[in-house]
Length: 599
Image (tube, rainbow, N blue to C red):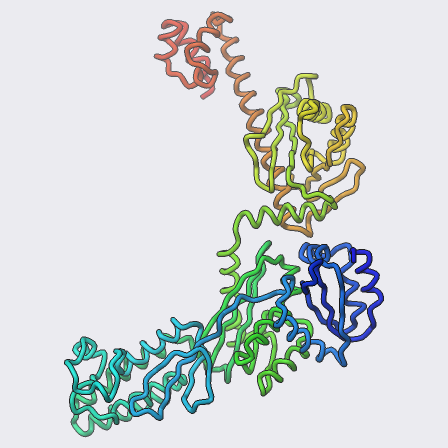
């Protein structure tokens, strides 16, 4: 099927809920979507203002299929199942996180040890987590073990009790030494129980128990034991302070925040378990703000339906999303108990969500490359100008003069959104004297493009608006050259606010910051290049005129100065002694005084 046939089929779809999918020429499914009303939703893909991503998808599509479902919720469930199965290239797919690890402790063993495992099992052991990665899980084990002086070595108990000398950890007080002869399993179990309090985020209960033990030891005058318990109390207290605790948030809570830049967007998820951050995840995508805004509901579904074990009791969102009720119903079904989605405006939930949004913003800044920005600006300019071809090469002209004197023109060239300075050109306007920007622009473009070998740009920008654009079009038409021409319309701050065709049709830049940024960069560069050239030419004339006005300095002496110093600028910068060495004492001093009389 071509695009016209796809559009015709879309218009023939039923006004029923269901799932639709596009296939490419090889029969591969490239996109899966769901709809409350299939005909209405699918026909939207054939509107003229579709996004670049949709444009690529429709160009690749060769067939359109659909399945009618009983209701919209059934369509949502089927869509999630099919996307997980086929992983279509134009759906938003998350990176494979390979799951989140858990800490496993089997209390049925005489000497329980900590293990890091990839998933829970119904084996009677206790599981804590999930954590943000294996490194995070091992870090938690190390911190808890050090706080409670539990062993971190590879010795196996009770097999290795009394075998060999205690290691350095015992010597430095980081481990109580269960490997020593005569040590029972009772103390080890007591410390493991306290460790489980920490893993379950029950810091308050553990510290109360330690406080009671410490006071009891002191009453019994067992000050050495009291000091040991005090050290553990302080270690646990320090460990609790290292955690970001949001005790007002009950149950398992995720903050799902997002941020969009010009060319990239990102989401960040911060997960809380009993008020303590247990894991985070951040991911960026090459999507514009509009594209990302449309993709957010799908991203949220992909994130949680791919790992149902991660569905929390509450999900905090940066803003309300479409189909929030359906999504909440799906998550509740997968979670086995109620899951609530909402967008907080204040308080502790808003604080946590702001952290997630800041993580997403930093990820956008970290992953956005300058080349991404320039490529996006070219795409946007091409789109708003309605050009069928990418505006890869842009050339712009500007005129500079002083009340008609020393009139010059500049031409700058941008390739793929970046200046190509080796291709810049300068023009001394020679065909007339006085002030006439239209004639000056006409002369510059004629000299630039009159040769048949001169390559035309994809877009020619004329500084000055419709009148200048029209003058350029008429001039080039006379020599049989017909580039795409637009004028740059300025606002009251001399910034380009719009582009205009030679016929007066304006193209606003206000709705496209990337396109506005590119056009402004081109305008500023053309203006800078013209002004720099004009000032240099005017400076040369002023010095030359100053030399000509000095009595006794004729053409021969001027030529002699130019041969010696090489330029008018060097003559102006020369010291009196240097001028005297060339012209003699009297004339040299006279020239120096004349050139510096206004300094």
